[in-house]
Length: 161
Ligand code: ADP
Image (cartoon, rainbow, N blue to C red; front, side, top):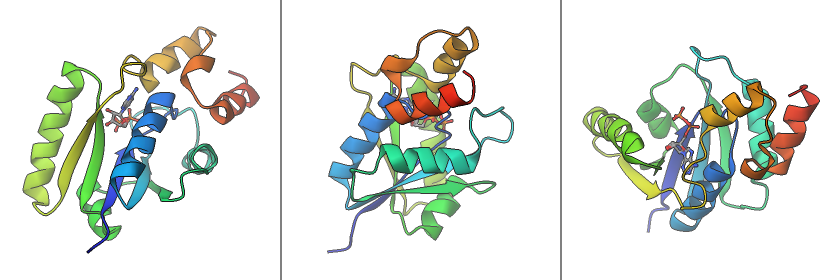
């Protein structure tokens, strides 16, 4: 049987324990899971793309079937095709995520009917964690240690956050 390959695209700025939970669960569903780090050109990022890739690889080192790739300026479905991924993995935290993700998934299904988007419900302990909220907390020098992997926290501290 063909291997089930999924792409989990996101900006991961920063990678949170919510993302890690989704990646762990995804790695049990698929034979191979590719974490695609997309640098959002319109938003200022905490880390460079290369830093994000290195940090994600370090945080996910125990998951043998997970690979981290970086991607700029390409449609998600084009990346999936290039990487031979038949599935896109996304997380749903709440109704707002659902509204947003539904439009993207339907559009992607038009653009690439052979690619299926699979949603996992955010687990209840991570539902309230978002990278954008963590950036707000960081801005005001609050403590984000319960919400991110240890290596991300170290890297943020080294950058003076
Ligand atoms: P994007 O900029 O593409 O939305 P994010 O890094 O914010 O990228 O999110 C990538 C994916 O991870 C999205 O599908 C999002 O719903 C999911 N996600 C984000 N935070 C969590 C969380 N706390 N629990 C589960 N899934 C999450």
